[in-house]
Length: 296
Image (cartoon, rainbow, N blue to C red; front, side, top):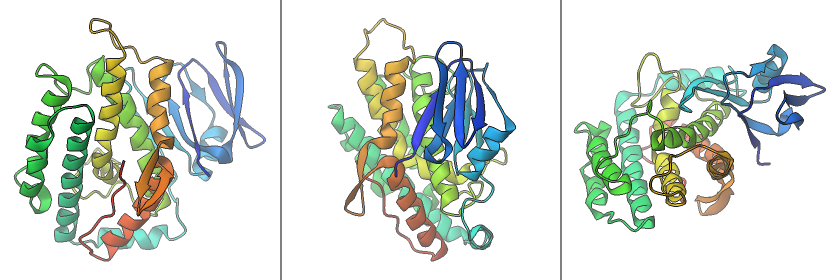
């Protein structure tokens, strides 16, 4: 079953009653959703209040709660402490993974990210060959930071020479933030459901980042968001400011139910993420230098 993704963007009170999540606001009235049908709850208004019973029910049903700031950057992500029946066993195995294995898997993730960037460029009519060539240059652990070299070329081809990726800026950067927040939340949910600790990353290791592994696995999916954002900007006038309205939100939220390919089968992205993280866990614990990636 595809879990629902609900965004609350109006001032509202969120409560729980009879296993129903209730969202009450002056603008929209009273809306409800069965808690077992919910996958991601996205909170993007500073005037939202949510009760402890609602948060507890979300945790018990493996619902990820994402709180965003005014730039649509996620400032808090609430996930269950135990999303899998073998959580403790998997945690011990994850801690024991050797550094060479993590470096090799990070190499594969960076290579796939660059391939996805090249695919996004091709889909918008830009030449992908310059960055596609860089995939062969990525070494174990990406010691020479080919990821950054590819990113510089990629952003210029995607949005022009004047664009700079700055998460705290409005407009196009806020649009990207919103899309990334959605995919990050779904990835976090899948990571926890697979029994993995999201804080133990392969490459991302900032001590203040509780979702290092999520951010590692998210990298190849970022170009999916980028393509959607390019298409959305093409629908607005050149001098018109980018406002994250209902149409834009629906498009980016729709990425989670968009069909994709995994192991030669077609699934919605949110479902494919669960297969992907389960397979990734097996590769990680078995010290296998392979990852089966989700494909567009």
